Length: 167
Image (tube, rainbow, N blue to C red):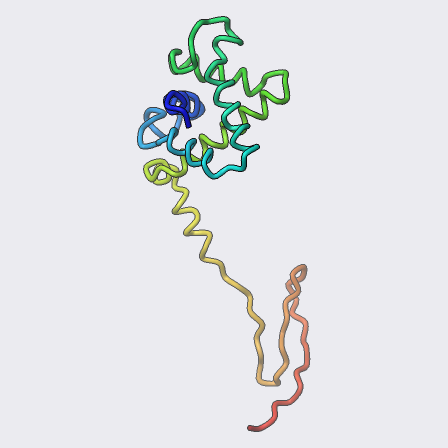
């Protein structure tokens, strides 16, 4: 990753988080967008890394080619960044929309890597509650008949087991 791409990643990916109603008080509280972007860039295939880099450059330089301003996205106020990204996500060009979705995915990964965001979202508690799964296991009654519950029916069916041989 080039030195100037780190601040660009912070500005672009942080703009996806927004302000106000987001889970964090400001887009950069406890979230390291640049490190997340660098990690994804490092672990991606060559083609995917090229797409990530192209997406970042496209978004970072979008004020120049979309608004005609001589600035990068990092030079805009936070509200304008969000509005500009909204325009890019809804851009007429499929390639631009998909590249912005790739950055949005990167921002989501960065957000959920931050412990403070995970705690505020309640994600870990919800996952822990869902992991308490109760399985319906087959039961063997005194007649040695196995009762089986079909997946699509609540009525048990019986399967006769052969008699047990004495050891």
